[in-house]
Length: 296
Image (cartoon, rainbow, N blue to C red):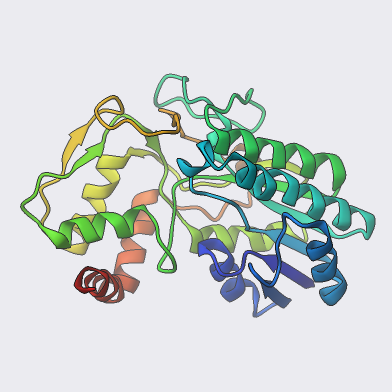
C-alpha cells in the first residue's frame, strides 16, 4: 500500500518509517516540508504522493507551552487533522490519526482504566486541542482510526526516559524529585508502530486505545528504567502538588486496549517487558547521547 507518514521525523514517525518500509511504499514528510496547519501545504503533500493511507504523527506536544501558545497548539492539533481528514476523505484515503490519553480528566480511581467509549473531559489546552483533532478526523474521514496512546518513548528524539537518564548521569547523588501520583503506561513507539501495521488494511474504524499493558507512576517508571540501565540515582517521590506545572495533567492516564483485545490483534507487551527490550537494544547509545548533551 502507498502510505504517507506525516511527522516522520518524530519518535513514532521515525519508527513507522522503519517498521512499515518492508511491506509498503512509504513516503515520510515533516515540518518544514509540510505545515499541517496550512491547508495548501497538506494538499501539496497529498498531490505529490497520492497515498492510499495517511498516518498523522504530527502534533504540538509541548503540553505546558500549549497553555500560552494556544493558537499554535490548535492550529497543529485541531486544524491540521481537519485538513488531513478533509483531503483524505475526498480521495478515499484511509487515515490513521495519533491522539492522546490527555483527552480524559484522570479522576477515575486508580487502577481502573479508561476504555474507548468512556466520556472525555480534557483538563488542558493540549488535551482540548487533541480532542478537537479527534472529532475533526471522525467527521471528515469516514475511513479513519484514531489511536490514543500515552507516555511515548524511543531511541529517537527527546522523551521522559532520556530526561531521567540525563538527570541520573548529571549527579547520581542529587535527590531529584519525580511525580509519584500520576499513573499511566510507558509505551515504546517501536511497538506502537508494529501495532499500526495490521491496522492499516483492517476494517476497524473509530477510536482505538494503544498503550503498553500494566501501569506505573512516573517515579516508578523512572526507577525501573535506571535499574535496568544499571545506573545509580537518588530520585525521590513527590506529589503533583509538590511539582506544579502550567498545564493540569490527569492523575489516571491508564488506558485499556479493549478494541485491540476484542479483535485479537494486540501486539503490546507489559511496559516492563518493552523497557527491558529497549534497554538491551539501546543502552550504550542512550548513555553516549546523554553524556554528549551533558558535556556541551
